[in-house]
Amino acid sequence: MKSKWKKGKTHPLQDIIQEVRKVFINMGFDEVENQIFIPEGDVYKQYGSEAPVILDRCYYLAGLPRPDIGLGKKQIAAIENIHPGFDFDEFKKILRGYREGSVEGDDLAEEMVNRLGIGMDKALRIIDLIPEFRSITPIPSRITLRSHMTAAWFPTLRAMQDTHELPLRLFSIGLRFRREQRVDSTHLRVHYGASCVVMDDGFDIDDGKKLSDKILGDLGFRNIRFARKKATSNYYEKDTEFEIYSNDLEIADCGMYSRVSLSNYDIGHPVFNLGFGLERILMIRSRKEDIREILYPQFYKPLELSDEEIARQVKIKIKPKTEEGKELVKLLVREAKRYSDERSPCRFRVYSGKLLGRKVDIDLVERERNTKLLGPAALNEIYVYDGNIYGVPSDVGKFAKELTGVKERGIKVDFSYIDAVMNLFVANVENLIMGGDKAMGETSAVVVSYAPNGKIRGYMQIKMAKTPADLNIKIGSIVRRFITSKNKGIYIRGPVFTALEVIVD
Image 1 (cartoon, rainbow, N blue to C red):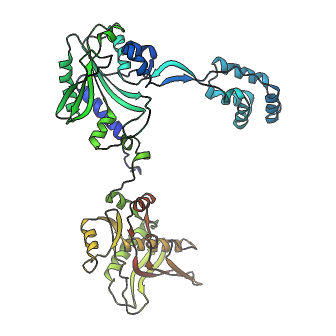
Image 2 (tube, rainbow, N blue to C red):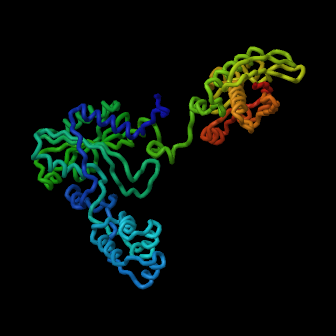
């Protein structure tokens, strides 16, 4: 059975993560997952005297203390009012378990429900009576969230140097958290970094630059240029930190780790590091000036739809339910086109057969004099061009030059006015046979009469269409919002004047 779900879309950030992983792995690097929680002391080991100002950009972890909760007379009375016969002894055991850590905070209400035999609503009302829960203040720890991947590389290298043969070639991709003073088009408080290290005796900065050139080249960057930083970060050896540019756009940073910082972790081998922000690469590739549009399009990206995307959201609203009905639509469309220019009044028997087990006769009709079977707009096709939706006559020679351009350069929707109308008519015929007493569609005229012998006579007509709904055409709400926001238009209307009569035996 064919799935009704179409293939989903990936996020560009996750796409580039997989791309970077592939590059590193193909170059012989092993992937590791570095720690996110970094003790404050590690920042001092790496940055030395610079650490206090570096820590200013770090987030510290804090936790809520678990208070010793006592129940006063007011709380006891209020609890008894909520649940007469409340088991206070068992409740005190639960609170003691919460304070000591055997009952987790997010399990407290469930414990009350299970052990006290009360409902969740009562458990939550009782918790709300206890002031200690509302007055808890977080207590900060000395643990920080990783602000740069280097903070996690030193502990990893120390742990692996005695258990793995050199050279160690490692990479890691993960989040970095920075306490930015503002969030804007180029500053985020959370971003992804890709970082690699090479630990090997004899490996120097020139080797590292060659390696960086290869890695970044495999990611599609050309004209790589290295610029020595005037102010070197303390965790890099002096004069070995370089900013890396591609076509004069900064894309990465590299350097040799400081021997002092390495010695603080008892690491006795040279270590080269290359790091780059994935969001930065996405901005360069997409030529976007606001990184938030790429990462969080649901919040920041303006609604943009191509003509193809708009065309896919122009649909027939009501269709027949049966396969017989769907085939009948095709026949009626074909016959309507065949007799479209016949002068009126006129009548054409276009179907005589079975539908839903009943004998059905259908005539295409036009009762008015001195016109044609179909109105001038009945055979209009639908095109999307430059964000607008048009109903376009099949012969645009006598119409505005603008419509000629629409037909030549626009995206054609896969149905026309007459297709939508006949779908509505046949759906109504099915509805009549199945006993429906209400016409389907917003403006279709359906006149029905019933004979004593069980015969049903129906007359269906669409005259002047003023909106897509008049033609049984549905346009998605997102498309409508886009068209309104861009001051575009929906020009699906016109004199359709199409009718049929049906007799059901």
